[in-house]
View 1 (spheres, rainbow, N blue to C red):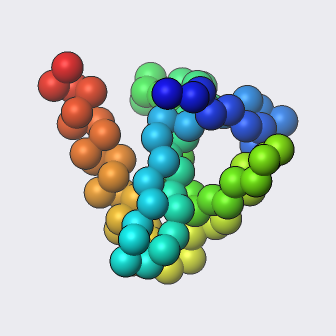
View 2 (view 1 turned 135 degrees about the vertical axis):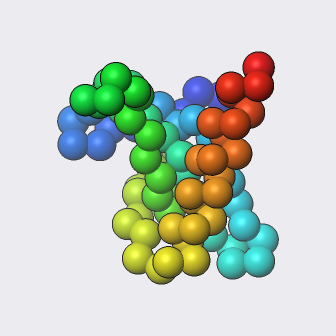
Length: 84
């Protein structure tokens, strides 16, 4: 799998995974800046995104349904890495 990196606020971020929803035709990205927060856990973020050949453009999530989709994706991801 291709490693997907991009900069956000001059910090290099790594995509943990992407997800395309066929029902909404939207692309979601779950990513990290690889920094540790005050709870001693790695930061994980989510966003809508558009990718062109040279860059990734993050789009803030405003729709509660999109947010719920991403929260469920993060929950499933965290569960899967705990079980491995």
